[in-house]
Image (cartoon, rainbow, N blue to C red; front, side):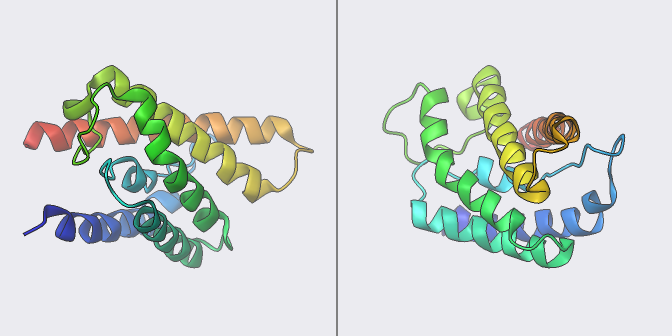
Length: 168
């Protein structure tokens, strides 16, 4: 049986519950919010169909928008992240033709996964906070939110990936 058949829905549910009940209530220094659900798109296999990836990401974003009272912001940002993921992943991996590759520290290496995660999370935060604020009048606040959330989310993504790979 296909491992992804169980992995994707389980990860979807776990990340949604964690974000709604835990991470939505955390805001470090008034601007840094952990957006851990980006991990869902980060760890999709290289050969996943783009339409499937974007559908999963949109569904997760729409569900989180419903519970977070951010109408369309998360759905749009997640869909864009899912659209960019295969192209960004190709920039950071050295293997050709391995369509069953799941991005993680153990499969692509620590430095490439860190760089890939940094670009994905940073890009996601830029889009998310740009849509959320919908204004550059307070660009200092926007920059604080983008940088703070990127650092907090990146630290969580790396910690979870490290723990996941240590248990395997």
